[in-house]
Length: 359
Image (cartoon, rainbow, N blue to C red; front, side):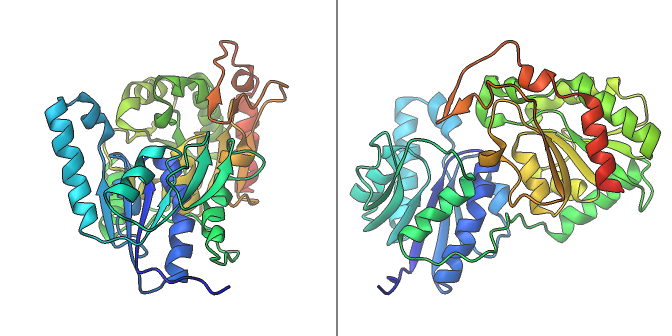
């Protein structure tokens, strides 16, 4: 059956950094299948930078849910219908909906009049989709493969190139060089990038994904003392306090870049490092997009589903052998105050993994 041609495509992903990075292989396959089409993406407010400069994306639209939820009823209507008005003028004929919610496909059908709407049927929420895949949750394979299944549903062929994309510009790269020079890092000096936070899309529950800051400090100190790599600390705006605490725990002259760089500038700084040590979080996938060696800590989340992709010898995932993990399944999380899945991973394991990457 020949592949139906589409000319104006909308891809909806309102979630966090990692989720939008997971979308980039799908975007690339759509572009390859329809090389002359117009591709737009509708994102949440935190992730615009991820797709800026992506050659496979023509336009980015933002729905700021945080601002929307805090606004008056009148302002909500104004924001909502203003966005719908702009989207309707684009005359989309295909939508990929990765929201797992019925609202986007409903408005796509009723207001935007998009004829072909592809997405997941999670808890029967896909009733407004024309092409749907039943979904109980993500398990047994990586999220990226689930996203690519939506392309396969339309007959789009998927080759082996499924790399995550994040495109940096010359200004980002120049910033990284200047920043490190200003903070006493010589050209070619070896660095360990440490990200003690992450998991912003989990909100207050993000702490359940965080390896103790004392462990990050211990591993960083060992790496400096025995391997000679200085530590570069990175984190998002909400992690400034955590990064500052980690800075005080590290016993060598580390560089704390939290609050001093944008998302892409942080990616450029990361790219100057030899190894990245981080939690299960969006920055792990930023590191993968730059081809970096990674050591990641996975506690409640299944690394086979949300881990480094594609997994290679450049990646080391640290987990604890406890029979209760992963406890995050089918988008549900059981809070656990013991957190053995994190506490039983020791700093020495991280040090040995980093050392193996450097030898």
